[in-house]
Image (cartoon, rainbow, N blue to C red; front, side):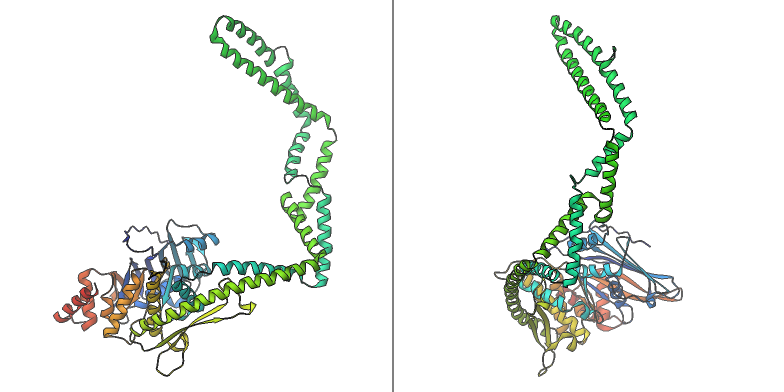
Length: 583
């Protein structure tokens, strides 16, 4: 099955550019026979009865982002499960596709994954065969999933550093440039300091290669092409000489030659022009034609003379071409590559012969490049430390609004040994949390449960996006081009805390698309799009269906979440009040 998709929609131009997930589909996946969900801007909420299969859709999306596949997801009795999605194409995703040789599909990127009942699978990107590795490369550009199983793998220290840099408006360009310069110098040093025996053996080889190419005395990068053309001429010398002399005879030599005929006609026209001006231009044109004939004839005669003047030239050309072919077999497919190979061998040889002086020069340059990198990395660390103090204070307040009582810190540790130097600096950025009074701060994955982790991520994202929107004296920055997905975010909360979560999700969705599975009506009321996941029975089989609800249906669904299966007038009014309050 190939997913073809063309979506037309209008954006609210007051919103910043936020790339999003347009469609998610699944066929013969777990208890889903076939389901398609079309998402929109803002907050997309998924609700339904417990056990209806809400998390199955998130699992399907995680699979499309490079998650591990299993034959267990194939619906009983089906040959294969197929999941697919359509994202808007981000510039970063386009670059990844290009690097992997995958054509772009207009402004969209189509992902599809097939899992056979025997466990084998296939991946397609824009309907072209791809690998799970490509999906994993695309994942950070397209979506970030925060669920019980995916949260910590999605929010590693690299993601934490990226989030901090985004909040602080920190750029790593200067550090990346200085790192590249330092790394290039150290690489040359490592090459020059290789084993003495290897170096001497390679010096003999490079000396031989350089001398062989130099002795060939290559005159041009296309010398072989020119010689092949000359060889074709000389190989057909008799035929070409006959043709050239026949052309000369027709143009100039015979009594009825073109030159003789044109000359006679020109005399008559010149006589006419003496009495009638209308013939002056035709006479000039005929004179020009006669001159062209004479030029062509001269070129033909020269060509014939050169063929006869070089009886031994063909043998010389064949010997030269054979020598050039030997060089190309050893040093490159073209003479240009052979010349470049010789130049590189000469350069390496010069480096070895002047090794001691070059070592001194490179060591001095390494020290200089390292000092420049250290200065840039130190400045970057200071910027991050300043941003961390501001972010941890704001984020802690946001986290504690979500029914948590925590202390939250961001540790920026400088790993100054050269082994830790990277293009993004030498800092290890790690979020620390203590969820109970008196407990020490520890890394998130050691403390927070899945639900707590999702709430921490939500608070962090809201804090960062509010900062990224531009405060006093701060430059406004673009929104991260990713869809954010939250599952199990409402575990262990209710009442005002649930409403606070809903408001934070709504705040976050003003800048980028958010998908959220929730069991709480206080959160569901904030949705811009509301999807109902329901389990039905057809032809004796259970299946999960997904559909987007209209406003009237939303009221009923939120009322169900308030009061259970039996709707009451009170629960309906309460649902209407929640929806109205959320607006």
